[in-house]
Length: 135
Picture 1 (cartoon, rainbow, N blue to C red):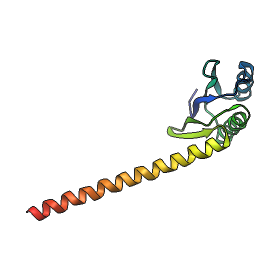
Picture 2 (picture 1 turned 90 degrees about the vertical axis):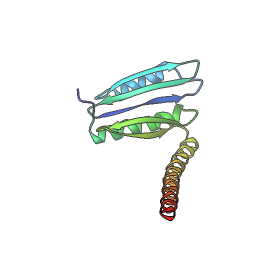
Picture 3 (picture 1 turned 180 degrees about the vertical axis):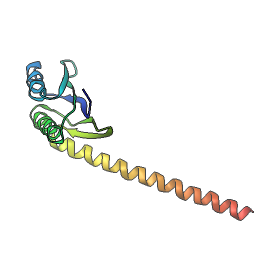
Picture 4 (picture 1 turned 90 degrees about the horizontal axis):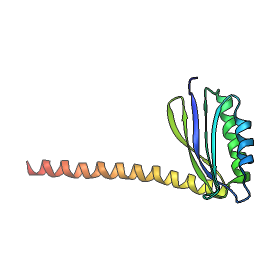
C-alpha cells in the first residue's frame, strides 16, 4: 500500500481514559487507514499513528475525528506530526486554550526565524561594508 498520508503523536489524556476508548477511536479510523495505538497509564497518554493511501476527504475526516476525540479526552495540547504526499507539517490537537497557545508559539517561532535571517543579512552587510572600506 502506498503511504500518501501519515499523522502521529502522543496525546496526554484524562485520568478516566481507558484503553477501550483508544480501541474505539482506532476502529473508527481503521477503514481505510492503518491505525497503531498504545496507551500508557503511568504518563496518562495515548500514542497514535494513522497512515494509508487516503483521499483528501478521508484525511480531513481523520483529523476532524482526532480533533473531536481530543476535545473529549485530552488534558493538554499536543503537536502531531503529519506527512501528506511527502510534505511534512504539524497539527495541533487537545484542549482549545492550549491549542491556541501552541499555535501562537508556532507563529512566534516563524517570526523569530525571519528576524534571525534578517539579522544575518545585516551582519553580512556590515562585513561587506567593512571589507570595502579597508580596500
